[in-house]
Image (cartoon, rainbow, N blue to C red; front, top):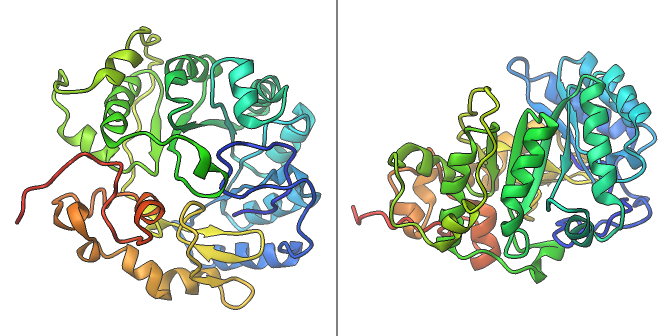
Length: 349
């Protein structure tokens, strides 16, 4: 749930085109509380609520909103920006309010490269300090990484940092060309395949998941013991040895995707299948989120694998994977089109 567009960073891949000042039309405290009450009313298993932005630390009512959700038995998480606002005191207050986890973004293994991608000098240092403070406060730490042509070579170094930070989860996001990211060089499908196989190796070091690359599930399901037929990027990523395993079990990816177990609420209340698929199914100022998610024709179409087209439409893994609907929309303007970032060509049935 996007609480605000206000953020001090100017990230090159920002889907939100974040801004310095809060939008006067952003959801009020009472409106956010209504959304949380609606979700709590669904009963167990209740959804995980992630407060994002912009920078949610720019909301003065953030602690109050976290506490309200926690009292309603919702699992609350926050995704702060790597700025001076992410202090030990601030993160400790979130933990006391009832947050269970935070996520910080690392897009390079060096201060220079990360700060260039995030648009503000010092972001790398603030991010590492925030991550360490979060763990000290007892919060579970997730590290998010955006992958595109400019950042893919940083993955081995980032993996080492994620391991050293003791993160509970590494979320590797394959950049969708929406928002500011339209100017970033995307990976070709064959390169994505190389990265997914490398991530399958990296999963022995830290638990990880992919965002907007659900075909990682196919890779894990069908991957032989010794991958063959992979491209030069796989070998390039393995030029640096993997860190030693952390001794924690690998995470099994969930069969969720845009509009299918995932839903996004913008700072103005628009409900979209995800933050990277900018199609509006409704607005929480007009109807409850649960009603929009369950009753929207758009959401229903994304949950129906029989409606997928192209290679995704004939793929036998439609229910397990289903392809990235955001990647399809960004490339073809149709959320039900085939995922252009997947190399698998299923046989004609």
